[in-house]
Length: 308
Ligand SMILES: [Fe+2]
Image 1 (cartoon, rainbow, N blue to C red):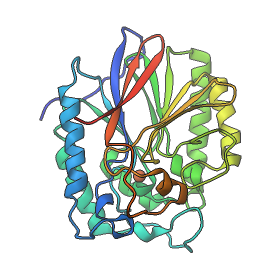
Image 2 (cartoon, protein in one colour):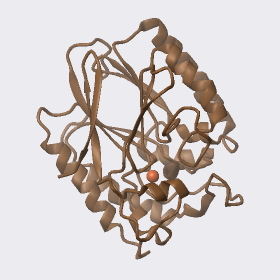
Image 3 (cartoon, rainbow, N blue to C red):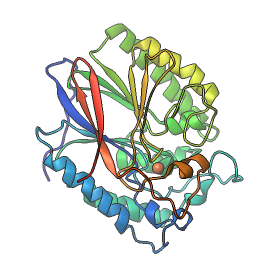
Image 4 (cartoon, protein in one colour):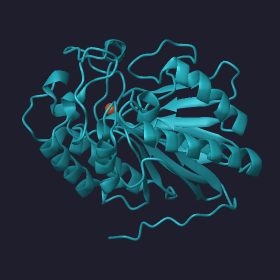
């Protein structure tokens, strides 16, 4: 194995590039509810994940790191509490421990071939739409802390667990801890004024505009109204997300904060499918699997690239 450790560094030295990706979601393409065959093998999503590996390993100069913004696999782990389905939040219907184990094994076997360090972010499929301390502990056993921050190459990287902002009913203590930590983190940034501080999460705060109604793909409006001003106040200008299986780049009304949602490494969704949050058999998405290349300089520039 190549050395892939990443050392923290708070002083800014020089411009650099890193990669953001989301929704490798091993197993999604096999899901019969989403046009899959239900055969129990993950070869379609595994092939997309290999494309991520091959594309990243070819980039010159070498990007400093990769950050994967959640939905690493499709099956949810154990520990989710069943509740009635049909609302905005899906139940534990995706919870399948054997598939969860097998999909994570498939993912690890592929991703270990990437030559650069990798940071992880948890998604709703990794810990549940309504996570519990147990479902989060399954994630942490494989990928580390569900929220954290690091100084990397002179910028502050803040990773949050968006699922707890989405619904903390079954893990309120953990969300209290996360909120307390995040408020401290934001005050530190406001005081220290790093060259850049960037937030990474799975579920976007919003997709089209900050006043849009609450839906499956954004964070509830009332929570959004509390946290977006706090982010702006601390000097955060960019938040990178996944979850949507499509691309979206949008500013807050005052243009101070950009929410960048990156499409999937794996299965893409059509506009109809995200509008109705269900599969449309005949729809073919207008987006192809890919990743986002982020260039850090005095500004932060980013572009989505389809895999070659
Ligand atoms: Fe996803």
